[in-house]
Image 1: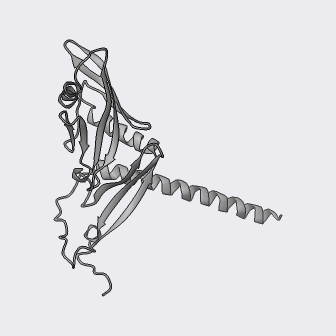
Image 2 (image 1 turned 180 degrees about the horizontal axis):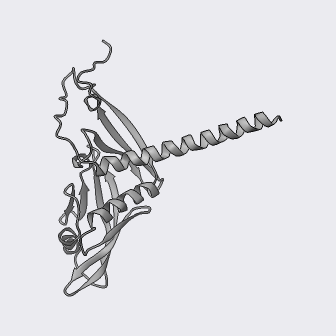
Image 3 (image 1 turned 45 degrees about the vertical axis):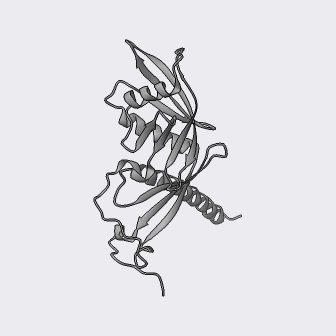
Length: 212
């Protein structure tokens, strides 16, 4: 093989590698931007016959590891100026690990949840097991402590009575008027997908209709 051909193959291989790497990074940055960038006050399009087509939907797939890193980066930012820390580990279920104050000390907290996708694309974490050190307390009482002491964003609601956590993905503050929803969350199969709706007005397109 001529030296020129070998050189071209090497360039093509490098180009393909960096293209795939760039696409993966772009997908992760898109999810980060949706969570951390502030939302603008924009009136959403109505569901009339003329406007219901004025947005496009995209499915973004990721892995447990990527989502886990993103969640814990957000939690670290949220708890930066607090004394109470916790983290999430996405395994075959959702594992919350942290500490809760009890009297003059803190005790380790461990909670396992099974995630479910609501009809509107939000997430419901159903409590499977819970422990607070060696203390024997009712699950509802521990979840009351969880809601009281662990900093959480406004779109996360701890429901001690139902022993679940509701994550209102649809209420998250995201940049522009993008809408985010969960399409699939199957931790056992490592199958996670998010649905992103992007109205055309985001790009300055005020009206757009499908072909008649």
